[in-house]
Structure formats: structure tokens, C-alpha cells
Image (tube, rainbow, N blue to C red):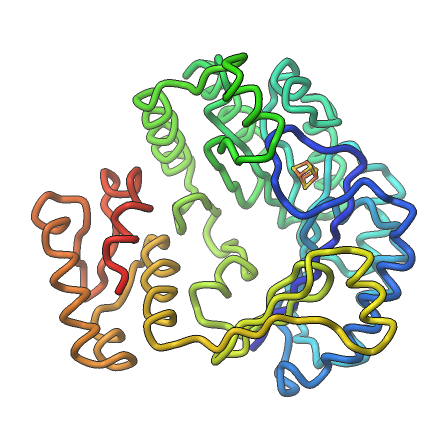
Amino acid sequence: MSCIYIHIPFCKTRCIYCDFFSTTQLELRDQYVNAVCKEIELTDKYLDGDTIHSIYFGGGTPSQLTPSQTGRILDTIQAHHPIAQNCETTIEINPDDVTESYVAALRSLHVNRVSLGIQTFHNDILRFIHRRHTSQQAIDAVRQLQGNGFSNISIDLMFGFPGETLEDWLHDIEQALKMNVQHISAYSLMYEEGTKLYDLLTHQQIQEIDEELSRTMYQTLTERLKDAGYEHYEISNFAQPNYYSRHNSSYWNNTHYLGLGAGAHSYNGTSRQNNISNLKEYIDDIHLGEPRVEIETLSNDQKYNETVMTRLRTSKGLNTDSIKMNFGNDFYHHLMTTATPYLNIGLLKITDGNLSLTPKGIYISNDIIASLFV
Ligand code: SF4
């Protein structure tokens, strides 16, 4: 089983915290869709005829494509790849793009999962980060999707905005729970270099929230969602039973995936390849029949590091025997030696042969994971 990811790098406006590859040159959408369809033809052997069980439109803002543009991409995928009967087809959408006709069109395209970028239900924060929707629009969008038969909805939330209090965050969590969505992804706000948010911070116009508060916010999130029946299956991801995201899961299950569009990555088990992150050059190259990709053959060290990183982010963790089996004794010894200090102080644990982060360890997961690398 393989997956397909399509990157849609268009946004109506830019949010101040975002460093994703996207553009506001909406006039290029049609040319871009043509290029993606051509790329599907050019790369049709990449997955060796394997059946596709997840198709994911990410962005950018995929809901900035018209349904007919989205449909053209889906039809072309269908013409070149076998698609599983129960394929999970997800589209990331912004609440302000949700209309009755758009939702109906998604249904007719057999999109069966949507991921809504909500971030917060506080209008003052939404305005500050330059999101285009209001809290009410986000609530209405979820209702409209549910009313039109969407039974697999994910929402994205963020916490740790400048000036945000624990009460503010609790309000967001409770509002999310009221909507009874199947999946919640929650991230702490990051100050990425090159963004307007980063500039505000470096010019001391805003202040990061206190680290202790950020930790409490994350802890509150995990406890509250767990109480409400969500499974905390990955550091930032929570799902009702049987609603783990297939797209997310593919990254730690070593599933092969084809990434289409400017800036997209692909992986076929031995190498990773990246499409060029320049819209115009991507379109031009594809039309010449020569997509530009950077291919990186993964060394054993890189594969080991990726396995450690992706698996340790999951609640199931990393099976230590599988490290011995797939990478050999030296890697196994390295893993156990580097993990031992964290096991001793309760930041990592081993259950049924699976090494995983404890709740205390999750908060400094990046540091722990990096120190297990070769
Ligand atoms: S957060 Fe999403 S909508 Fe905002 S600029 Fe980034 S990709 Fe576009």
C-alpha cells in the first residue's frame, strides 16, 4: 500500500507565523494544476503499480483550487494508479472557503476526509496571526461539513500565542471537544526565521510565553483529550478510535509515497527525492517533460535516524528488536546505550519491547530523539 501527497502552494493571504512554501499568485493555479497532472503521467512508475490507500492534498491552501481543478488531479491519479476501495482522500481546507456548494462538490469528488486549519477560536488571536476566518466561521464550517455527511474531520489547533493564558487555551480545547471531530492536531506556536512573527519577536514587539506555561498547556491538552476519549497516537496528533490519519501514519510505517507538485517529497524505500520549490520553474520543467528532482539515496545511518525519529514520536514507540533485525547489533547497542540515561530518569520507557517517550519525556522529545541518533 502506498500514498500520494499533492502540494497546493497557493494562499489567498499569508499568515504571519507560516514558513511553508506557498504563494499568493493565484493566477497561476490553472497552469499549476496542468503541471501536476502532467507530473502524474511522468511519474506513474514511481510506486511500481502499488495500490494507493491515501491521497492527501496539503498546502498552502488546497481549498483555493476550484472543485473542477481538484477533480482533474484526482481523475489523473485514478487513470495512472490503482486506488484502494477504501482509500482515504483528505483535503486541507480553510474555514473561510467552506460554502454549501464547495462541500457538496467535495462529496461528489469522493473526498472522504477534511482537515480544517482553525488554529484558535479567539478572534483577537486570529486577527493577530492574519488568519482570514473568524471563530464563528470555523464552527459553522465544521457543522456544514458534518451536516453534509463528512464523518472524518480533523482540525488543527495552535497554542502558546503571545499573551495567551491557560484559560484561553482551555476555551479552545473545550470548543474543539464540543464539535466532536474525529481528529485533532495541536502544535505549539513556532517562531520561524523569516516570518513576520519572528520579526515582531526580535524587535521585542511581542514576547514568547513562559516555558512553564507552554508545558502546562500541552499537558492540559493531552489530559483533557484523553479524558474525552481521544487516543494520543503521536506527539501532536489525537484521534478517536480508528481515526488515525493514514497520511501521518505512512511516515512512521515506512510506507512508500509519491509527492506531487512544487516542493513535494517522495520516498520509495531506498531514496528520497524532492521536487524543486519554485513554482514557475516547476511548471516550466514539467512542460518540457523534465521535472527537476534532487535524489538522495539514504544511507543506513540516515534510515536508522529516521526510524528512531518517526517511531519515537508515536505512542506505540520503537520496537527495539526491529532495530536489531533491520539494522544489526551495532545499531541496537547504540540505541540501548544512548537510551539508558533517559530510561533511568523516567523520560523514556520500554513496554513489551517498545521504547517510547514518557509524558515527561514528550516535552523535550526533540532533544531526546536527537541524542539517540548515530
Ligand atoms: S498557515 Fe496555511 S493558510 Fe496560512 S500562509 Fe501558511 S499555508 Fe497559507
